[in-house]
Image 1: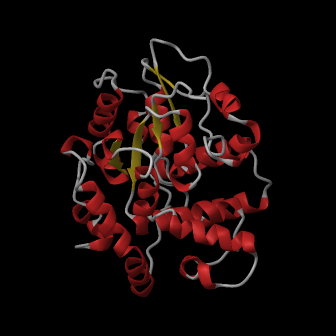
Image 2 (image 1 turned 45 degrees about the vertical axis):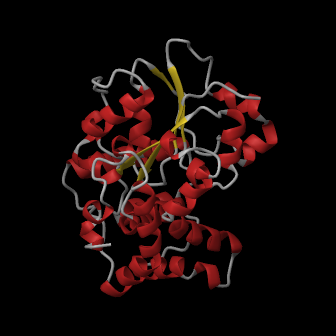
Length: 302
């Protein structure tokens, strides 16, 4: 069956998808699920077990006056998703958010560390384990988590899966870095792309992308307390206030050797991502269309 679905935010993990969800949901001409869900998506395990009717039921009763959309980082990463989206929502538009893959790795590592599903190791050791996860031995579940930390930054591989099912002109590309610097300019492009009033300013506009925490006490607390939605909200509030109060939670830097290793790993993927962007019409590219410039802090010239 084909369902009513006008747009999907298919951004990579730790690339401002939560901020995009809130800013889109607050627009009076858009309709999104009441909660941002990551595992309830077309193509995922729950979809395969429960079917398309179950999924579209999560979106609520569609209003003729509103564009209907959804947000999940799994849409871009799960290889089953493009085919399922093509089957059930063949006319959908896509908003794909990306981020400097090295910055994304550091943020993703701490995110996974907070969830307690990988060992509590220093950043350097943990990132090096992630880089070598494909050839390492050990617990398969932990290996998968390490592998995901790295592979979620292979944007070109994930984009090509969709391009086997959809034309490139269905996509609007945005960057985390542009959102951080010019949030309203990015939103205006997204609103125009979807086909709604581009001048609406959502209440969440100046919240900026969600801060990850790098404070070891908060990370340790999350790891020892059973995870729940309520705890997640409490920790998000604590982290937000730590930033507002100026409590140190700066993203830690990697050594030169580890950074060089990540550059070598990601370079061909960044270069191929740039080539894909150059095939996109100018209005569908990021505000900063040259990834060498957008990601110059860690890359210089790609």
